[in-house]
Image (cartoon, rainbow, N blue to C red; front, side, top):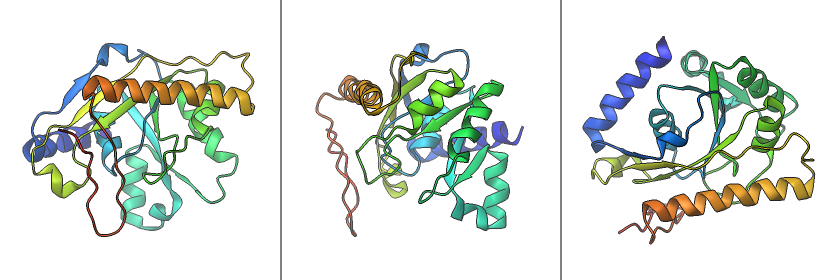
Length: 215
């Protein structure tokens, strides 16, 4: 109940701040649980992913440091967050989301790169999806990359791709992982071009704001 309430509140706030977001290819979203994967471009892209895929509810990973604060811990638990040690993930980083997905009530938002500052895809999402017997659904976010720039009212667009089903016979060794990663990256590239053929994502460190170079 709290998740739905908070989702509605956030939807109203973002509408006031940035206007109506555009969501493409929602018809591609499966009826059952899935792992929503996308390139991590801003700290609030998971929020827009969750709004775009509504009414389905999501779980997500959060670094364990956030759970040390009692207020954040309460909030994260109530929006289906679970802690992960990024330096030493351990078996629970796989077992917990698999267990959540198998229950069927929640889907999972994951960023295969693991960080906004890396474009290298990693294999955790594929392993989780295969073990939970759910598809991967690629998604991309295009729009402002800082909260301040949301106020520019530059439109946010989220696009979904065709689900990627992992064959249960596929071995997720180096070759198998590479195959799934290639499919995900190809989907991300195609979705970016669908939204804007001239799109280029640039991650600028330091004091400069990130810019997406959209026209």
